[in-house]
Length: 555
Image 1: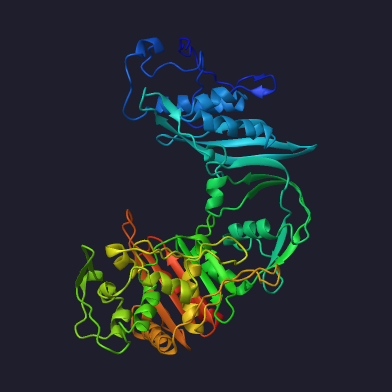
Image 2: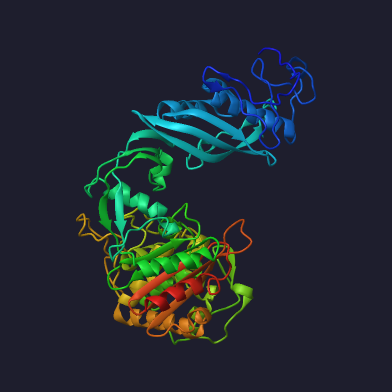
């Protein structure tokens, strides 16, 4: 490595254009210009690199180290010196192909990178360039951020490499590609024939991407030219769809009709926008049609693809199991002690309450944890899993709603984890779509797989449940949910929601969160809905009002 020389003088003007490329952008909010010689800048204390060989620097990064490292990376990237840019990161083997593909595959040229004001070890920067493909040019602008870290082996400051440095929509393993779109665009319609757009409905970005990916070729459209994110294996495993970032020339869209109700979708969007980290889904009980689905955070479709512990809303499924097996009966006495130990875990109720000489209905309505866990010794490890799969159609990974979705998970567990599963903790995972379907199944008596696009469009088969609840157990389960909506933890939220109603609240503890996730699932007539507010607290006061308002409006 050559010696590093100190910068004699900082530039006060923009650097000269050399060979059609700007060498470095200067003057961005707290950045100075750092001349780079022999692969690096002068050390913070003014000494040469040769003086530091025996000394490994540790501790927090200095502002100078952050700005120097960021400038070195941005300068090399902008100048097309990909190997040099990659060398300033902690993972050159991953950085090099993505930075190379930025020009070669994404066809982005004339790039200008302007750093902003650093915030600790993070440096924001703006990107301006031109996407050029077969004679078609279009400007590209966006903002990104990089983070500087210190390598433990030698103390060297480096850019903490992730694909999101290149573009914030990239996940590690994704690539940027410009060309004829592999999938033609689609014009998605609501059930009344109106067009669905993210301008109207902010939540629908992931849904529209999913519709295009599945139906673009089938709907009769013609592909245009675009810059898009092509998902890698890891992102596809999470059901993330490819994403269009810039359209250079329009394709001809095909048309796909969905089941979304425009008025209800608009209402759902408005409700979640007022409650951070909230998501909600509304279904038609008799068919499974999805009438509305919205997320406060539109970047990820938690409503369909979330994988979260459902807390006490899971007690709807657990109750069906206990009623079926004769381990509980709505109006019979049922234990609800302060504590119950199972599998060497000591479980307790919220605020350590107990119900003396109470019924199972009272325990369900007040959401008594120990009333359910006390029955664990009488259950087999796979009983809850079978109940969820056979009656409620969950956890079989076979739903086909028209866009990517997660179908819930109720894994077979033992000892304390099995006990925790009975109250929606442990390994149980759900999302609002799953829990809305649970309420719909209780109201209908039969599982109807939810769907966003009618199976008549493409002839796909919807998932089926292998059996229904016996009439006696089903009747009691409806009684439990109805009583909870009128007198239990769901009563406040459901006040004013008339008709044939039922509900269940839930709170799910999550490691590292001060507040639990609040859940609420309910039905009214031919409608069923569920929602979650992450880090919201109790479901009755957080997700409950969102769900109840949609049921009231839809009714």
